[in-house]
Length: 347
Image (cartoon, rainbow, N blue to C red; front, side, top):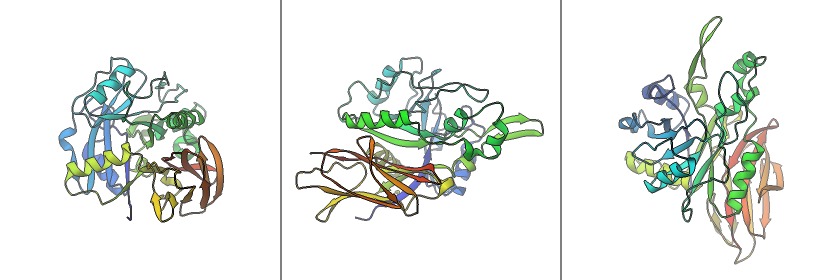
């Protein structure tokens, strides 16, 4: 069956919390950037939820970010605001008890400066609900604003504002290692990228500047959902398609400043049968051929159980004869560009 790749963005803020744009502004920016879906996550509020649905050909989903002083969590598919004064383990359990799921936000922040505080996920032993069986959790592997601000100093703030790509270095090695280890231990965890867009307005010697406009943010870190059918005209059904693709790890993400990534293909195959990201094929009938093609001349690495096992330019292939968690990374110009969710091969 031919899969459909649908681009979108998650983790953004509006005037309902500390963003500067209305939901109408955000939708216009998303449409201009070529996105088909967005997940708005204002801090500790669902005030914009009445705006959910198809708006100007963009599917709008309104969830919220649980934001204590540290340990932020994107609470998805819930109809009430979770108590941010509870311990992280407790508010995660609250989300899943309410029928939702969630994503650990910007877990590896280390730098405090005049743009941001440190919003690190403090206890990495807390990685999901206490009752984990059959429940998946996400990690925001790459957060646009967090990554950029982690590089910010008093001396470089103007160059980084004028050339923001200089401040983007991709997911931290610690975050990727944590993600790999969770999946290798059987705690199924999907990975995403978040823009964390606010369109902050700050004073400068020449007037007020916007750091950074929604339109620009939506042209950067993009999540591509792998769907069996186009997003439905019915907004509730379409929202369920988005939730399902995320939760099942049927997505990859890329920095579109270095090129669109909807042409990616990554699969495992054997004797005419094919498995995609998020699938769990077995080795019962023999080795599987892992194939990745990113549709460009990027440098591609196949990661198996947390380490690089094959590489190539544009394309990589590998015969997998051992169980493991297999995913793909790609780089352009020496900089991180694309990350897939894993294929889980069992013995």
